[in-house]
Length: 119
Image (cartoon, rainbow, N blue to C red; front, side):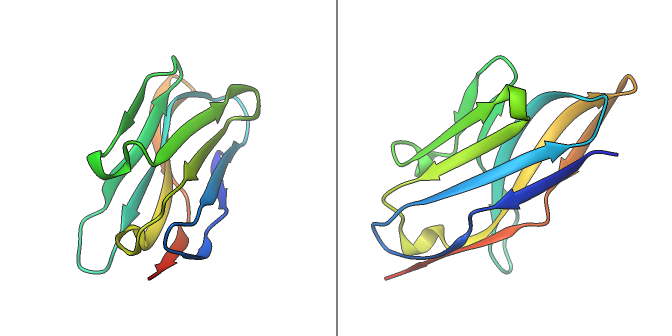
């Protein structure tokens, strides 16, 4: 079984920084893509950033220039460095992974970590 374990959320003042981490644990899997989504009450979950196993990255427009996604393939871990945070970045952030295991493509979600940006 493969699991995603997130860490790094919390409370920060506007203009501050946070770093989220997400590690995939288990056996016999190969990650295709990992990323971060966020969700606020009453709204759909939206992509923040993602990175493929080939290093291709994709950001939502509001994250460009402020957030950086990176990945440690050896540790099956993805990081999201968030700088210049704004109150509108406040949300539950969820790690997502698309991976191959036993010749099947699986999609996994982490449990979510809350990011609160105070004005």
